[in-house]
Image 1 (cartoon, one colour):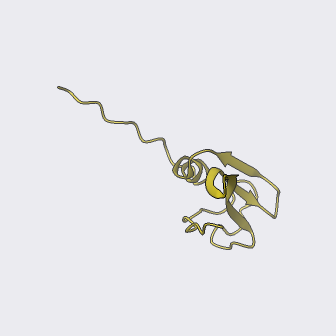
Image 2 (cartoon, rainbow, N blue to C red):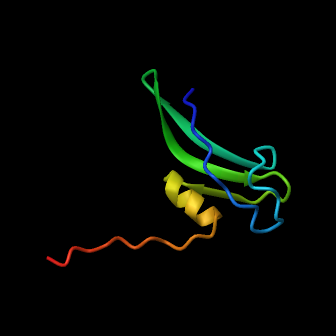
Image 3 (cartoon, rainbow, N blue to C red):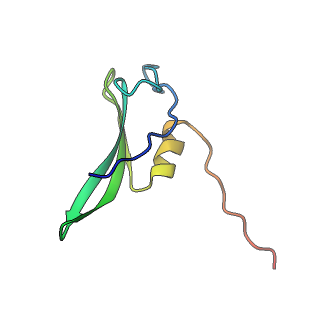
Length: 79
């Protein structure tokens, strides 16, 4: 099974459980298996204190949502 580096997560936005504690805030990559190989199909963050969960196909987007960060707008070329 592939190992994923745990991103920096803020405290739970609902119950304020410690985001740096992996026992309180779980970050998971949900694996799909194909022909003997594997790939990550989606990512999840779960707070074990209050039970809130977020899921997204993209790790960066999921972390952005959990951490309450504004969406980064793509820069359009002026040319």
